[in-house]
Length: 260
Image (cartoon, rainbow, N blue to C red; front, top):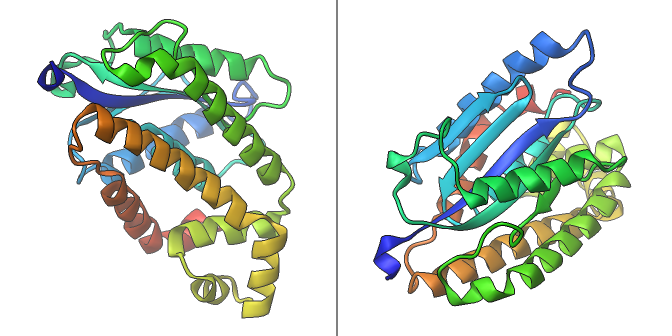
């Protein structure tokens, strides 16, 4: 049975306050740029499907349960417009065809519906969190873990809400230190980039709860990868390859990307 299924994940990105009169064209150009980044980041992990559509929306589908969340997290950390932040409805599961066969413009699948449902729930919130998983409203997958999708959904969203609480409390410099560390992985390198002393970087890192934020990011990835490995008899999970690819590309453009 397992050979007939393929592990995937999905996000649907929307932008807050995108209807501002002076931002429409600029955001459209920026979202096209984000699609280009996603395609570059994904080159080493196989086929993906990504499309900028409906003005301020990006839909992404990739192999691997953790792929969409990894993409979404990095996009949120380098996002340029502070008053027009993105939010991501997320889902993951299994499909009975390869992504190469999917026309994302026409594809109708319960997992797409799940991601859109998550996106719509975020849209209804006054203080919109950046991420939300919806897993069991419309979808029932082929593997044993699926009977616990409601429980996984609750755990993921609880972690994400705690993460969001910490993110909201960061100052601008703490946010910059955290995003820089996510890419560079060394406080010394962050200090060199930002022209700050090691004690200053360390202070911002601790006060901004960067370690806790990034720990929650990696824990969610670990859980998603574990589910995938158990469902597919330890087939290769490419999250590490994807993360390294993203970091390598961002390092080359870090001054431009974090200039805002």
